[in-house]
Every structure is written in C-alpha cells, then in structure tokens.
Image (cartoon, rainbow over all chains, first blue to last red; front, side):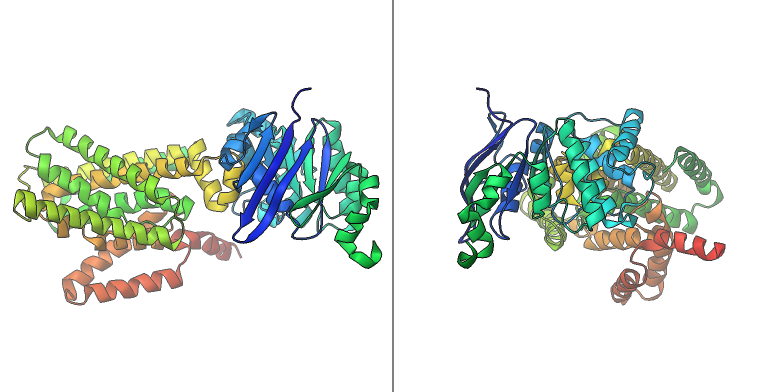
Amino acid sequence: MSAPLLRLDALTRAFGGLVALNGVSFAVAQGDIVGLIGPNGSGKTTALNLVSGALAPDAGRVLLEGRDVGGLAAHRIARLGIARTFQLVRVLPGMSAGENVLAGLAFGRDAAWGGTAQARVESLLARVGLAGKALVPADALTYIDQKRLELARALALSPRLLLLDEWLAGLNPTELQEGISLIRSLREEGHSILMVEHVMDAIRSLCGRCVVMNAGRVIAEGPPAEVLAEREVIRAYLGDEDA
Amino acid sequence: MSLRAFGLALAALAALALLPWLDTGFWLALGIGIAQYAVLATAWALFSGPTGYVSLASAAFFGIGAYAVAVLGEALPWPVVLLVAAALGVAVSLLVGFATLRLSGVYFVVFTFGLAELIRQLVTWFEVNVTRTIGRYVFLDATQAGIYWQLLALFALLLAAGTWIGRSRLGFALRVIGGDEVVARHVGIDTARAKIALFAVSALFMAVTGAVMAPRWTYIDPAIAFNPVISFQVLIMALLGGAHRLLGPLLGVVPLTLLFELLNAHFPNHASILLGAVFMLVVYAVPRGVIGLLPLLRRRAVA
C-alpha cells in the first residue's frame, strides 16, 4: 500500500511545561476531507502549525507522501504543496485582492509571474466567488470575502494538501451554507483537506472522517456520525454528567 | 515607479548635472550634500520601506566605502576602487544579514546601531595598534564637479535598480513580508533570503556613496567616516519624505539638508539638540511621510 498523502506519526510539542501535543498520530488520504475537532486548547491549531511549518515538532514525524517534512521551514513546506488559511483571517492589508492572490502564485509549487499570473489570479478569484474584485483593497472586503480571499491565496499555491483553520468560524447562517458548498466543490475537484472546525454541521456534511483531540491526544477517530456519538467525545466536550 | 516617471526623473537628473557650470562654490557644495543624502536615504528606504526593518547601519556601510578609498585610493584605478568599496559593503551586509535579520523590531534597530559602532571601534583599534596613526589622508585629484556627477549617476542607477526591483518578484516578496511575515513564509517566500538580498543592494549603494565622498575630505578618521549622525539623518530624511515610494525619501532629503545646513551654520553648538527636536517633530507630525500626505491633499483639492 502506498503512503497516505499526510501522516502524523507520534507528533509531540510542548510550550514550556505545557504539552500541547502528546504523541498525536493520524492520516489524511488523497482526496479526503478530514475534520480535526476537539474542545478549545486541545491542540488542533498546534497540530496544524506543525504540519504547515509554523512550528517545529519536539518529537515525531510529519510525513507528506512518505517524506518527513517535520521541522522544515514554512516556505519549504509551502513549496512542497501544503497551503493553509489562518484561524484569525490574515489578508495582506496594504494590497489589493488580486495582489493577495498573486502572493500565493508567485512563490509556490507551480509559480507564475507576469501575464500568465494575472489570468490565474482572475480565475482563482472567480473560483471563490470574488470575480471582478481584483482591484479592491483587501482590507476593504467584508469578513466573508476576506475569508474567501485567504482561500484563493491558499489555492494559488496549487496545494496537494489544504489546511483550513476554522475557516467557517464567524459566518452567519447564509454565509455558512455558501462556505460549506464552496469547500464541498473543492472536494469534488479532488482537493485533499485537513480542517480544524467547531461548526459540527460542516463536519457532518463535509468530512469523510474526523479526528477528535482532547488535551493534546487523539481520543477518537472515524466517520463523523460514529465518532460524535462516542462516550469519551461527549465527555470531552460536555463533561461527565452528560456522557 | 512607472517607466514614464523614471524617464522624467532621468531627464531631471540630466538637467541637474548642469549645475557645476553655473556655480562651483556654495551651490555646488549644497548640491553634493543633497545628492549624497538622496542616494543614502533612497537606498535606506529601498530595504527599510517595504520591510519595516529600521536600520541604523547606514554609517557603517558609508564608512566602509570611505575607508576603501582611504586605503586603496592611490594604489588602484578609480573604477576598481569603487568596485572594491561596493564588494566590501555587500560582504559586510551579508554577514550582518545572516546574523541579524532573524531579529525584528527594536532588537534589529539596536543591533544595527551597535554594529556601526563596533566597526568604528574596530577600525580605530586597527589604526592605533597596527598602522599607528588614527587618521588617513586622501590625496586624489577629484574635483567637486566630478564628485557631484558621480553622485547623480549613482542616484540614477539606484532609481533604475529600485524601479526594476519594484516590478520584480523580489520587490513583491518584500512587500508581502512587510504586510505579514507569517503569511509570507506560508506562501513559499524564503523571507530571510529576500531580506538579505535587498539589504545587500541597499548597502552596496551606501558604500559606493562613501567612496565617492571620501576624496572631498582630504583627511578622514573613523569618527568622520563612521559618524553615527549620518545614520540618524538618513533615517529621518527617509521618514520625512516617505519610505514607501521610491522617490519619497527625496522629498525629505531636500528640505532637511537645507535645514541641517542652516542649523550647522547658525547654531553650531546646538545643532544636535535641534536635530533631535526635528526627529521628534517628523515622527509625530508626518508618520507616513510627505508623500503619504499627497493623496490627502489631492482628495481635499477634489472636494
């Protein structure tokens, strides 16, 4: 059997005395959407940061198609094909929407610059529903449009794996439906996604599998419907009385 | 800068090159002062503008260039001396870059200032202990007009380099870094390499400026060549003009060179106090520089 697209192997990372990740292992198969869920502070974002290279692991491995990329600089991991969005949306403030997408195109795996890049910027903006907004300053966009823009910038890297850190957080119900269908359409195009998410409707409707973390460990793993019914998962979220 | 603006700037520089035929005294000396700081402040802003990394190492690179001339000026042909000065500036900037560009914010500022002082002390130590003389004479038959023209040519080259970088992937990378360094890394930008590359270009122009200016003094010692006031003046001129646009610093260089000239002439004993006051005024009153005020003025004119 060939190696999965991404495999975390006994990944560990501590901040001072706080062990944020303690021997975390799971995998993301090619073409799959995996949801990473768990209470606040359970280590989800830290796991994403170790995969994207924002942080280096203390121990364990991050295997991208069998190659250990754990501890590589973020820009090298980005060029190897892992793109991400951020928990608190991070558009480049002094730049237009088009330039934000160009930032993803100009230095990535399948880099483009000049005329060909402009055409791709337009199509990426259209892809996330921002057609015709290339010249709008990024910080003048609405919140959901900034989220779309961040997604377009990540897609501009032609990623093999897309990391979404609470990409759906803070959207109103209408926007949420739009957001969910946008991510679904990415899956239909064959994108592989690892998403940290608190919106359970999104996890149920999008993810083939989900991984539940609590206090730096994986406590459950499997199809969302089964996993969310598990006793230990309910206890992690709601406490003993409700389990 | 657009190609049209670049063309206009070149035409303006060509017109300014006529100055030595009009006056060879005070005005030419003033022209040299302005041209010198135009190169230094624009080179400073080339790196510090987009990245937001405030460097106080200008005097170090300037002094390295001046000392290259003091040591080699009589031994080698002039163009070779300039090349050596440029190479030394780049070499030191690469060393500093690898050591410091991982620092950010105030740590970077303090380090660059310390570096300039360290180089000054090292040169002083070397001169005292090895050559056994603190100063050096620079006897080169360079005319004032020659120095002025070289500075103008250097400024033209710098504008060309700045225009090219501004349109290149490197310039774009620097803007992304200035916007959000975390994002920059996550879109595949080798942030350290991009910053060091531009820091080196900036240092190259500063070192050559120091080299071109050296023959003007006849006598130099470390306190003159590595004068930290140069770093501060360059910084404040670029900030006053606006460090985000290629021609921005120039808008600060012209009025402040005139002002410092006046201060030195009329209040020689209090010049540095007044200089400090100007610093604070600029930072408080025009944080985005004169060029940052232009859109505001335009809006007001339309309204």
